[in-house]
Image (cartoon, rainbow, N blue to C red; front, side):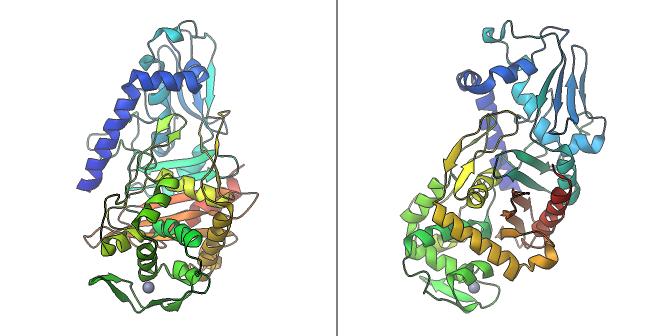
Length: 433
Ligand SMILES: [Zn+2]
């Protein structure tokens, strides 16, 4: 936890620097802040504003005299990391980011309006409530849900959370951090999607190659282990089995420079912008490491760190033929398209993720009625515990949802994060417009 806290703190520092850095602020303001700033402009005491979700549910309301939130405590808590608060306790919420009190420079003069203004989010507050309920108030974790065809961010929840109106005395470690965008975590096997993409594009014999696993394999004398032997596997089977030995071998065969190239190209080391809010960078060994460490880095261990938001971009791209429609959460915002993954590689990964879900996770039982493509991660923390990850998307044109789910110290990927995801997606398919 200490490690994460330190990282989270430095991320918070960076976020604070960005928010208070006037230079960066002005650039952002000129870019696309103009209209949004209007919404929260209240220097005219007659002006009032509403922050609403995609269905018009009020998440925050302010006037000259009052600063209010949803009347429902659970809604306030579940949506806290989206809204933030009026007091800038989390630097990354919508209110923190676009609140007029922090915008005291002349460009804004004359932009105040007496009439009520409304800022609409793409977020569905009911979905966030469902996610928060499934993650569990008592667990640490995060979940993102995005429409990969449009880029609309539908759900974003980070736990622990708090009631902005009544934060309480003793907050859990990192409560103010939005784990979805402002922190990076050991990825474990979800990272194999990146190693797999590099293999698809750089190993011509992949379709005929067999990967042998008897539970342990030594790279330069250092063992890499699987829970059990996977024996003779095709490449597709190795991903489905999430075989550490196969993917450690692949990373060593590809070499460190090729691995770095893909980690960089897929944006894992970059800070991105979600509606103008900066996200956390990840990490990967960039200086020379020997083969054993390289092997471990190819299976998402070593010094690998991934921000859930960066992983969301990648699964959105895989789901959408290789192109990510950059996620956003303010309705009407323009979104860029980025070709993140080669179309043929995205198609192959999607096929393998669907095969994995059906063949390995028993999708019909765990995710009844959902055509799901996914990858689990069980990220060993070195103290006997593991982060539980589940990432992927629905192959469903009516419900084109991509997701990233993390339950910190939740154990096996499929058990904790997998069941949270299953429950949330069932709800989403039945209830989202
Ligand atoms: Zn294995």
